[in-house]
Length: 268
Image (cartoon, rainbow, N blue to C red; front, side, top):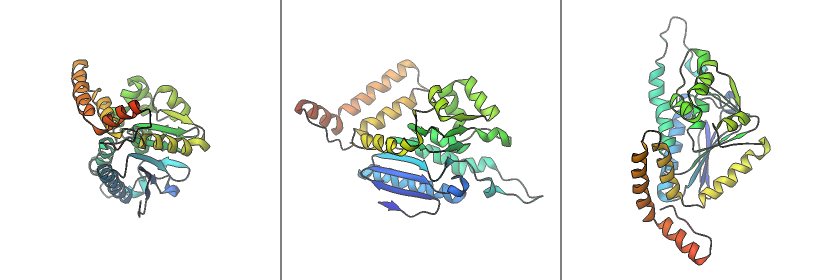
């Protein structure tokens, strides 16, 4: 299954949906059309999750960059004109995008193939697993324009890195290479450039064949831990374990273990 879009590429194969940001001449920076098409594509992913055709999402970029953030030429203002309301842009575009990504009931993998700057960096970091090419980099470029990090950056960065490193990256706007991003725990793994796509495809295939119902509950539990206290998290674990224990995936996993065969998970 494929979708026809102007600024992105979208395809589904063997349970893996691949969404490629496709404005390589602009380093895949966001404009209004891309935002609308991303929302449409994520609706297709959510629909595919419900009918069983999609079990994993891979998000990547075309060309030499992952995403350079906002396309500033899409916000050009003539001298004397009133400046745009950037808060409105966040509310209409970036907020629903990152919320839709985080709400997906399946594993989401970012394959960062080049520079990920501004909102492009934070969209990648909102995914569940982030793989980055060795030549890739992450830049919180908002400070160069007198802005604050958006797309969840002020929430994600201190939780992944602590306030000292989060402030250093966001106030200075320094480039953070993929190797150091892995060492700091910002991303899951840095791999050689030529191995990025094959590595991500292998992981996506592994996850697509796995118990995706349990994966979805695991995601929810991990993210909930940032606001729950320890006892609240234990209650959540109990409740989710009850739900998982009644799932067909758990039933199949136990049966496969007893029968000494490979499980055939369906994601429910």
